[in-house]
Length: 157
Image (cartoon, rainbow, N blue to C red; front, side, top):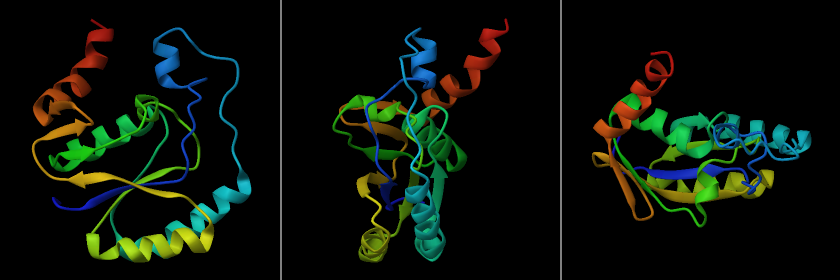
């Protein structure tokens, strides 16, 4: 729903090696991101303890943050406005990250669980509107849907 806060749980790096972006641009890189199994276990505990405060949750995997945002927006046709420091953050596929939306009243509870499990939590923005806005770039939900649904059929045309 609209007027929720969007958070990234977990830490991003700037390594695009092995990512979908790197594959599409012929720049596979020299090393894939590494998993930290102890941190992954803490993340699972944080997620289990946070279930009651999440309005939505989506893993970050193939395609990174931008793919998860797109899938989440298209599922309910509700836009989002986020800010990232570096556009690389949109495409990295660092393991151990989850995109969540929570009611603003639950921000302190999420931060407390972040502290308890020593997992970074970063507010990215809010839900609402009819587009995806990332920093100064905006794409309507209709355009986003067209790009998302038309790409695969064009590859096989």
